[in-house]
Image (cartoon, rainbow, N blue to C red; front, top):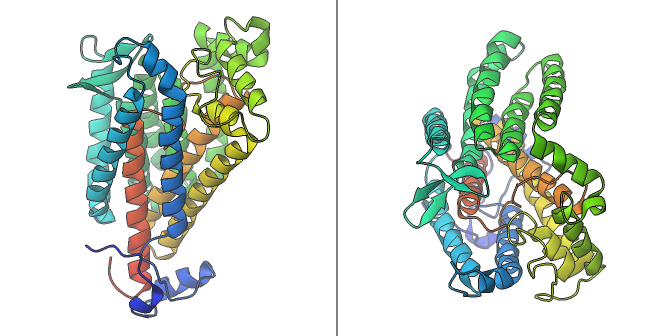
Length: 409
């Protein structure tokens, strides 16, 4: 399969031959001639985030890498590993792009079941690897694999397939909502055993967001939202360490060396950055003051080194990527490719919700939560899962464009 971003003059000018394709073209307000094989705004926003992330992972991790024994005191330790994960993600993404969406639909239930099995293995003592009191990783040779990252993509694929199968019954509480609720509660139970509350929130948003987009009864969805909010509040209140995070979030400087330590130093980083930052590489907070500077709090280092302008650029790139994901999804649905459309919007929900939570935590708008910034933070499983999701999104866009040219996909 040949991908091309060639000039318009080199491509055949063919009009959409079927009514669904013609409706999709007109609905988007676009001409019927599409000079590119893939969406350039989607590609450039994703590539920009990945490259900015690579630079900032290196900048934010130099002091940590030089100061730790297991890194061999090599300043490039995290940079090299992050670069390797990016290459692995690009290779896996290139392979995944070759698979038609009908194959992904066939695989979705099996991938989801496989993801559940991996989550079970993680919580079995002696199999899962524990780091900082949480058992979220499976050792794979010299690397660690985090099943919850892959589960976010598997949840989007499964929820889209489930919604397509249940389309005639979307108004039914018993036939459309209850089965998905049971599945999400099972996954949530396993994630809370790790514990990984952040991944549970994201996966819940993906699954029920896709159900909502698929046309579930609005009253049922509203009831779900209320029940979910009460459930999350109970999970926070009944867990001492989550409750402490809430109190630390409300006034981080009251206990700046205890509950509010991470947030207080993140806010200091934002304050030091002002408009244009202190300069790339010149952060003070990354010098063992701000924990997880190259993972959960990479945005705070961006704010300190590149200032408000740098943060706004990152936000704009995420907004563009999420917008294109939803636009591609709407286009696929107009072309009567419902599974592909819901998957695209599910990926948009995933990236949008997770990036919003991470940014909110970094800025002190949300309680501290261990969620990385998609496409940017250090973490092999997350980067590979993000690259795989982008490849599927590009595949959906490519198939849309082939149909609108009059060809098959």
